[in-house]
Image 1: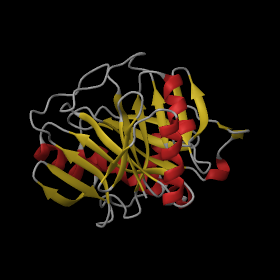
Image 2 (image 1 turned 90 degrees about the vertical axis):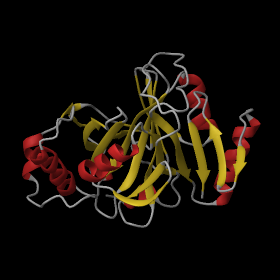
Image 3 (image 1 turned 120 degrees about the vertical axis):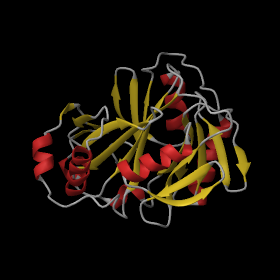
Amino acid sequence: METKFFENPATYVGQVCINVTNLDRSIAFYEEVVGFNVLERAGNSASLTADGKRPILTIVEPEGSMPKEERKAGLFHFAILLPSREDLSSFLTHLIKAGRTLQLGASDHHVSEALYFNDPDGNGIEVYRDRLSDEWSWNGSTVKMVTDPLDADSLVAESDREWEGLPSDTVMGHIHLHVADLKKTEAFYKNGLGFDIVATYPGALFTSTAGYHHHIGLNIWNGEGAGKPSPNSAGLRWFSLLFPDKEMREKAIDRLQQSGVDVEETGEGYKVEDPSGNHIQLIV
């Protein structure tokens, strides 16, 4: 894994927070299946970590929790980036040996190899590894990403190492969101937050900083005009964007405010909603 896409001067996803309907069940799933450790549990929430120091996923069981609502804006999936192909191989073998009845999907995107499945509440999860960036194909400012079948046999054969949970240098690689309107969304993330549009597909945009293949994916596959989900339904609660410094964050906040977007100061930084109501924390 090339850490340059997750350090200064990049702006990237630091943490994702999701709603679930049964906290105990979800903790067991994320520990046993995905390989997280619980960093802290307090009340109706738990923060999960790979390195024992920093949370990269927080799960919350809100009061009056509801099942995931269909055809809404919000989470498509969050994507956990493993350091190497060997790690992804061990993870796939772990899933096979555990006999998990997951609806497992798999794709080779040329920039990466990825496994897809849902948690018990239908929250989408991707676990992936990147190819080296010098293997990615660019046409100007556009990166080539495809959805080819994954060579699962080759991946399984890559390593015979036992899965021992998420490696300590695992990061939240990206997040992919359902949105209501691509034009408004592009203006918000590009002109406001300062992300580059690096790929477009029918009904979807992919954005990044520092030349990554994507830190944020955005699509209207749940339908144009998709509404906001109920605040207590399973799905995305918020995600954080980690800026390289306060100056970069202030510039983004100023651009957002100049375009009429309300940015709220909090005790830990600032928060904002994108045009579809996805909550974002802006942190340094």
